[in-house]
Image (tube, rainbow, N blue to C red; front, side, top):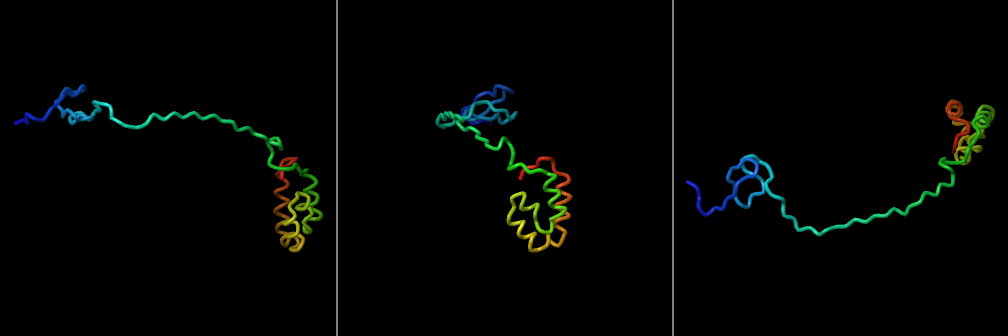
Length: 122
C-alpha cells in the first residue's frame, strides 16, 4: 500500500512515479532536474602581456666550429684544449690534470664531436 503523504512526480523520460524531491529517476536512472548550486558567478578575464625577448635567435648558446673543436680534441685532447675552446673551464682543468680522463674522455668527446652539426652551440 502506497503512503499517501509522500508527494510524487512523474519522470519525464520513463513516466514512472518518483519522489518529488528526486533529481535522478529511481527507475531509469536519468537526471530529471538540474542540480541546485549556490556558487558565485566567476568571471575570468586573463590577458597575456608576456613578450619573448630572445637575444640568441633561438639557439641555446654561443656557436662553436665543429672542425676546430675536433682538431683540438684530436691533437690536444689530453690537455683539455677542446673543453677550454667550448668555454667549459672546469672540465678543461679536469682533463688537464687527469690526462683527458685517462684518454677515455677524449675518445668519447672525439666521437660525439664527429656527429655534431657545424656550427654547434654550447
